[in-house]
Image: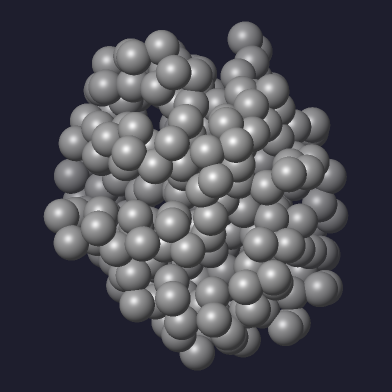
Length: 260
């Protein structure tokens, strides 16, 4: 978790905002996926989210669903992804890396075994999309024992009293979902999350990032203005398929660096 704290602190000192980049690990195969992940880091992603493919990705839109299906068809496993993370850690010692996925693959491997392997690979935390706060009691203490953060998700529909409970002992950063619905690029994003951020600032000192929907630099600049950073996923997945990942990350990085 120290890498996460230091990453946000560096961006605060330099100016600009943190770019959290999501790519589905193993899409379309392990070799190409690792090349894409390295491209994203080299081009300016601060925090890397390694998506773990799952057969029933209920929170994801078409781009990430299709990426997960390609990875599963290629036979990619959680063990493969953790091994790839270890290779990335050797070459990118300062960049925080997080496993992003659904509870079933982690439960199937075993929470203890998952946390032990993630720690050994140099991962910094996990984000489990379909494991609500009330049901995280078996997994979160295990992650803490291994020094891994369980990144909290706050939805647009989460009441502030529930958000307070979620954030009471949270670690890493807060992932605020900007819109209701599944992941995916959007042409327009609501401005209501700005008030949401103000309310959450009263509940936690953790950095707050906004995710779901950002597709380009102009949107990134607008969305990140009141937050500590943004998450971009579907747009990066699609850009990787179209051989323009480096260019999109550079566009996003430039937009975020332009925010005072």
